[in-house]
Length: 198
Image 1: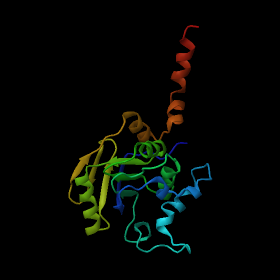
Image 2 (image 1 turned 135 degrees about the horizontal axis):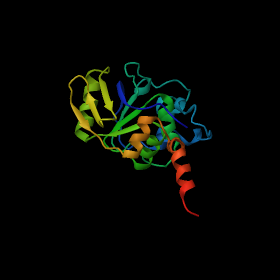
Image 3 (image 1 turned 45 degrees about the horizontal axis):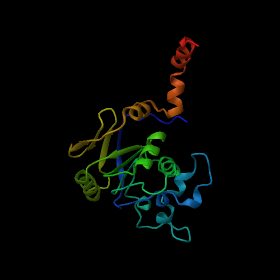
Image 4 (image 1 turned 135 degrees about the vertical axis):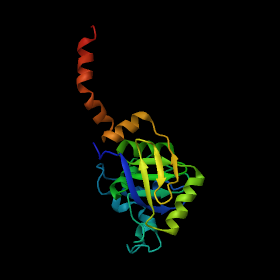
């Protein structure tokens, strides 16, 4: 399933300065029945967003109208726990295209890269700067440049580089998942197969 190409994203951000956010908190297990990547955004952080009577919890960041944007800024060790792909699906389906943290669980990070959510790992010091900037001004904008592999606080120009696997980077720039990547090479694969001696 292809997704939108990712190049440069400039957006405000939603802060979630909580450490050790696991995948069961991102998308509780009772919502894992669907097999398509649709509808999971409604239940992103479900137990943190809603009370037992389904009313929104006013003090949770996703329910606070002063925060918005396509970037989620999480605390250290974001996406730990089980390997469920649905956690990344929920992040994407909600509308986030980038998650920033000072540390990601590897499986969650790879699941994000497979569906078009860019995980940007920054230093703890830079993460603190981002949280402080958003606290001072909830409309603070971040620029995420995938070609340059940089994240910038637009107001101050402070920036930091981030790492990404070159294969995953190329796929995200083109909006490819692993199957799209292979389909894009179909002619090359066919030509190679026709020229392999039996």
